[in-house]
Amino acid sequence: MRILLVEDDHRVGAVMTSMLQRRGYAVEHAATATAALEAAPCDLVLLDLNLPDGDGIDVCRVLRARNENLGIIAVTARGEERDRVTGLRVGADDYVVKPFSMAELQARIEALLRRTMRSAPAPAQVVEVGPLRIDLGARTVTVDSEPVNLTRKEFDILASLARQPGIALTRERIMLDVWQTTWSGKHTLEVHVASLRNKLGDPDLVQTVRGVGYRLRST
Image 1: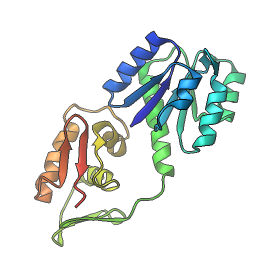
Image 2: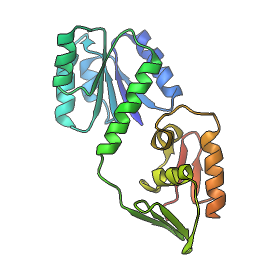
Image 3: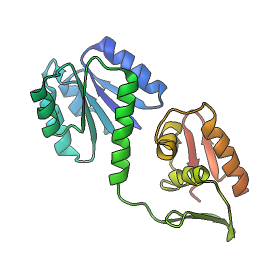
């Protein structure tokens, strides 16, 4: 997932960028309103409202007008009620007042992503890849027309990948889809994927993308 971090303090921006990257996010740092509005498309914006060349409220308004589905979290020292109300009214989905902990920010990012995923268009209910057939609605899986008995978590992992076949998903995105958090035991996902591959009978159906995560083979 791609995050645009809009923060004029370069020291704070560097620390936040590093911490977000360690959590598996791709981060672009913009230190000004101009840079924020010229940045590449992203999935979520962490927006400081105090910028050297403009008001973050105006940036929020423009970003929201461009994309009504973009996640925006205002991250600012402005803690007055009128500031929070204004930020939410012009398009921010959430409002975090400095100082804050990364644990709190992570929880708010996850909550916003869950809301975004629930509002996203429904994916195709049946996905077929070679001999593999996944019915997302009925929660059934067959290989060469033979049923495959998966645990709930194994099916949820497969379903997460099947919604975007051929696209590499980060481990954090899969964890969020399946466990509703990006934090769990270090090898939890790997153990479930290994079991899933064994049951599917073809390890190449669920492919490892080094340094990223996994993808479902598309053909």
